[in-house]
Amino acid sequence: MANHKSALKRIRQAEKRRLHNKYYAKTARNAVKKLRNSSEKESATEMFPKVAAMLDKLAKRNVIHKNKASNLKSKLAKHINKL
Image (cartoon, rainbow, N blue to C red; front, top):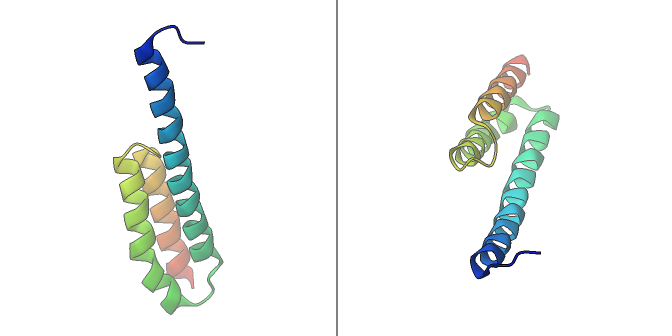
């Protein structure tokens, strides 16, 4: 266990941040799954900018890596073009 007041605060902050990041990462994963499972081009095209923006925000805030966000967006764009 931590011995310093600042270390205890750091532990509290890290846990709070971890839960916050986990929530937003999970929300993005669900949005990506929903887009991948959509079989209608119109709805998928409508959803794509929202999902892409969500991924960009996560990458900007270092919740996910920027290359991962780019790869996901690329794969989703390919999926939409195939429909």
